[in-house]
Length: 357
Image 1 (cartoon, one colour):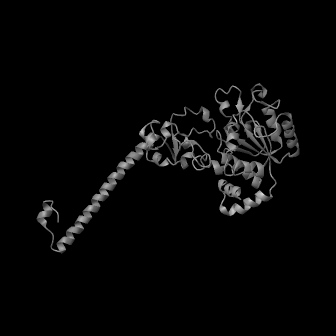
Image 2 (cartoon, rainbow, N blue to C red):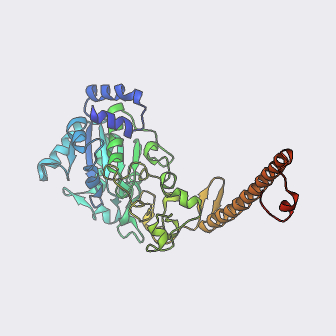
Image 3 (tube, helix red, strand yellow):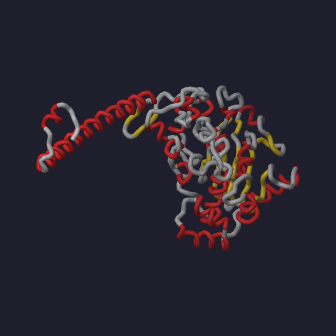
């Protein structure tokens, strides 16, 4: 029940859907999952096992049937590879294929070889019988760090090699643990992929920019920016845009889900977002150089423009406030003069000399 409550919240479902989630968890056959590893660092698996809503142990032991994963499997070697071939045949068209890592193509894919076969070969074979494919991490989704210029192994994304199947991109370096478990559990419970955006990412997790959910957004809107990481503005928690934060162009759930059971995320720890869930983030300028421009409603502007507009707006607000205060005080003075005259207490001489009453 705890896992179902957590899942209902993580998937963005209303509380009224809890009974449906519980029923699906109790009656749905555990979906078979095959998890392949390509050109990567295993960081996505490290993230996956740290999910706390739901716990990874609940997912693996109670909610899915993880039949192959050369990182988490107890078996190894020839017996494990034979089991993979068996599952691909027996569960054809019914299993979820989770892929972690990019696909190197040069030299016939020899730069990544698992079980005596190139990863490209294993991927194509496993993809044929998959009901759906999940690209876990920026490596599987976009090619990853190994695809950075000059990309010596010609590594590409999973979707560049296989097609004709529903593909869910879950980018991030690595993705947030609860995002990883949430995506696979959505399919496990409802038998269909979650709603996706134009790039194939789940909308419930990639529907907002980090900029939109950032607690420092108020400083951005006020034109208050950190100029250097050790300045007073940094210590005061101002906006990190000018020191390279890519939150305004990065779509992810870091600002609301955060990491390690909601403990923190890079911006909260004082470092700008590097946009690790965006395509080609490794080649998109220097991490500590500010973005050239940022999108706002119906316009494009810069941080300097934001600051200038905020400053002008603040000055204008002060002027307007001052004028309003002066007018209000003048009206109060006139009312007070009328009251004193009616009571015969008005002293014209003191009034003209600036005296009080």
